[in-house]
Image (tube, rainbow, N blue to C red):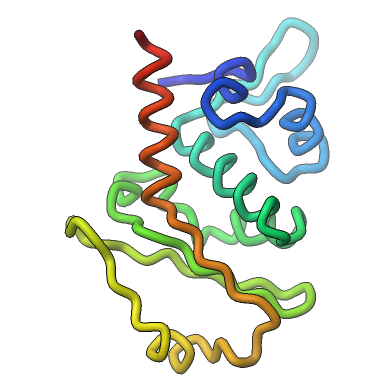
Length: 153
């Protein structure tokens, strides 16, 4: 399924001018087709919509656009564009100054995911980070998918 700017606004709530700013600064890019001049359009995938929604949520939570962009481009969230997307439950973002680390947790087909924060603190040395954010990706995905279904009606 393919989406254009008007769809992005309806589905994610990101206004066209904001989306255009993000594109111009290199924070977000369409994976299907990049507009190459007058009369051409950006074409976005469902995975792009998920990435836009994660970008929006993370930046609204106080993370800098550059840090979130670097994280998205690092490949950590590469599964947003693959079948494993259905198994991502949440994402953990850890920030220290301009350094960002993150990981996506899968629920491996279960209905829920349990995270032991003490285990995470040790495994990821969370004590050294200034901020730690957990984003409920499953909820973002469910919201985007529902909006897409309703758009088809």
